[in-house]
Image (cartoon, rainbow, N blue to C red; front, side):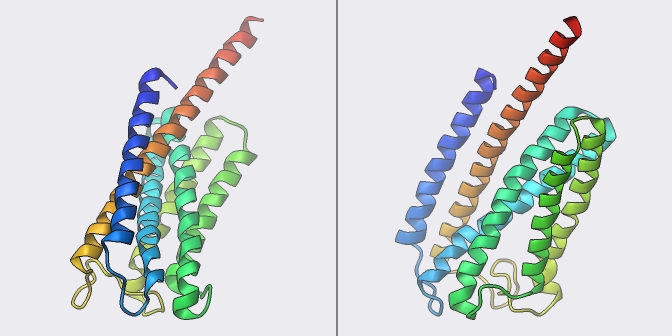
Amino acid sequence: MSGRSDRRVGILLGAAVLFLAAALALVFGWAPEERTMGPIQKIFYIHVPSAWVAFLAFFVVFAASIAYLAARRERYDRIAASSAEVGLLFCTLVLITGPIWAKPVWGVWWTWDPRLTSTLVLWFLYLGYFALRSYLPPGSRRSALSAVLGVIGFLDVPVIYFSIRWWRNQHPSPVLAGGEGSGLDPRMRLAFFFSLAAFTVLYAALLAARLGLAERRARAERLLDEWRERT
């Protein structure tokens, strides 16, 4: 990474740490406990922002994949792969924190609820994205096939988002923009939006760091190819 890129990553990581510290203080020192679920409800402030970041990351994969298919620029492929890596991390966090909440509240770790199932499908789709990239050698064919899978994989995101609106299921109804009877206590809402901001900035920092490494690796490979051609 260049010095400028390093500074950008450092600033974003510093901002993420500050936002996370503020969010933790608000979650555990300001937001009240939910009356029926008690302390386990605090996982909401990790679970939902993780899902938001996973969706955001996969949207970036979707957009960068379309850009690659249109322009065939390798940078778009590197952006898509870097964002998919970060997105898969946060999607995994969603699948871990969900059952931790579900066991004490529902009495089971997992149920084949539409939202849970479609989230698991998304996780497998992006696991397949990396399996494909590790199987094929670097080049335009790998980039193009990855882009196609990146576009197809994102189509599951709207299904996940609307699943609790389309089908009656065990997953809780949306607490934001969920219509009459939904909503959060103002102190919960403040803590939630700080958590959302913290996770978003953390995503930006991780994406910038991962993309910087990918750019450095691509540059090193180009130099190695040039050296081989001369010798």
